[in-house]
Length: 148
Length: 148
DNA sequence: TCAACTTAAGTTGTGCACGATCTAAGTGGA
DNA sequence: TCCACTTAGATCGTGCACAACTTAAGTTGA
Image (cartoon, rainbow over all chains, first blue to last red; front, side, top):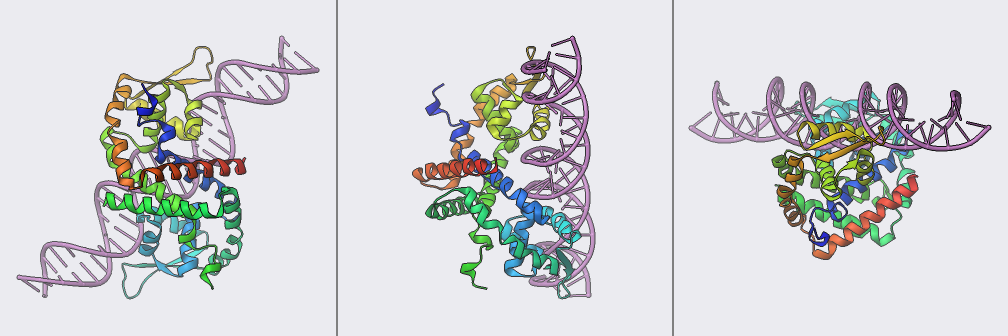
């Protein structure tokens, strides 16, 4: 078998580079987020809340591309840990508003120390960050357009 | 708060682009792998076996950067589905050799139709694939060097 | 030789992801 | 009005990921 004609070589698979990179970055976050009592997806939810304030579960799902099956139990854990509060909206009883508690809002200050460490560990040049983010964003929207 | 000084904006986080891209690509694979009766991590294990033949669990773990806690049950499911066979090595009873069954080996032919579809759906230019894969590979090794 | 150590693998528990299913609340048209 | 439909969210089951722990086999040095 001629390797140059083999489309199933692991090292050539972009999908595997992506999968491995994503897990390695999550692993990089883990010890720092442990100190904050957060998992990586929980951290992402808080990023949205710190940025946009109280949001319905649906908006969190849109922002992070996660469904209720993932978010409902995750938010329940965040609530159990005292970082958010969930309340049914009065004007639409179907909707649940997720709000930061004082403790959840205060955690933002401690989280500010995280991104610089991540950036350093990634070891890319300044302009490479932009190139990579742009390629990933285009890849994702192309794939999602194809799936839809 | 001035957005340009906010290091916690979701859309600026490379880590989120990575996380979202990885999940979207896995979702792209899902319907095609469903037809083969595989999950995405199972597909990756088979890529290694198709390429290298019978391998100890340890080597699979090294190739895919997965630990025994992930691989042991995954391999048990692949074996239950008749795609691989696990046998203790005679020369070192600690090691378990994972071999393809005839059925597992035959699945390769059907898997050959998958990569072209994935490539099309990603919608990147020819040279962008290489750039992206290279950036991701460097990112991963830099992050892993930092973690170690 | 045999106790200390290392290595390969498995097990358990927690927390994502996601498909499938369910419920309850809101909406719209004949 | 009221029935079909849609929407927001929760729940359940399966399969990763990964940390922590356990077991059994192999290795090594005093």
